[in-house]
Amino acid sequence: MKNNFILIVLITGLLAFTPTYAGAQPISRNKENAATQELIQNQTGKQLTALDWYNRGVALNNNSDQELACYQKAVAVDPTFAPAYYNMGIIYMKRDQNAQAISSFNQFLKYSHDQAKRQDVTKAITDLGGEPAPESGTQNQPLSGDLKQQAIRLYNAGIALNNNSDEEMQYYLQAIVLDPGFAAAHMNLGLLYYHRKDYKDALTELTKYMEYTNDPPQQRNQVLNLIEWLYVAVKTSSPAAAPQQQPVSQQTPAAPAPQQAPGSTNSAAPGPQQMQEVPLQ
Image 1 (cartoon, rainbow, N blue to C red):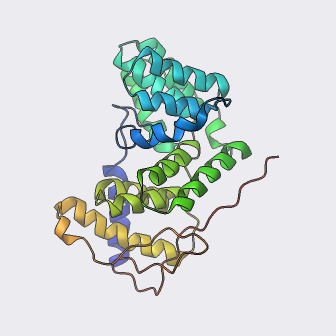
Image 2: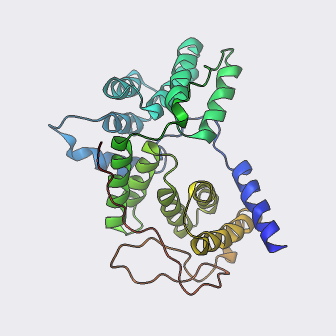
């Protein structure tokens, strides 16, 4: 019975908290702009990557020509950088430039690995009177070694901080932009939201972790216990229900063993270790 309930929790959580296309969903555009600004301050004099240009657009967050130009420069550097096409489409849609929005969204569909957002974008194109581009199979191809390596470096930078700061959160968010299926980054991001009592976002990220993870059953079960608690907390909007123990937590190789997740019967809750960089082919 409990397993059935947990399954219902997972499915309901995924359905209830899937982002919609109505607003841009970049690297924590509203919550972490200060962290984004901090991360781009030291870029003077270096050749900017697609992610750098993307971050500059996100930091502007004003739907301006300047923001749009940042995303255009991002795709000029890397024509496969799907998140920039997504944000371009959002800006064009807000300007009622439907043809440009449809074109940008179709480019997003061509290169994106984010299945949930692909569904939202497909609906947006239809609502705008366009025709979603036929699937080319690109989104089903494995991520390039370069993107995976960049995502892992960003994730490891967050792990190195390990201080629950906006900057740590920003690294995980950027890793997910590059690799939407990066399960460990979703888990750490969910735990940061949990520590901040942002239970709705925590539930969203931890259910994404469950969708993508290949972690052993012990760790998955502990996250399921936390998801079950979060689902109840979100539905009841009851901060007083917060558990006293910490849930599963991030680890660095030197970190002490974390405490149990709420309701867990396991003696320890293993968190994601620092990832090894993927060598380029």
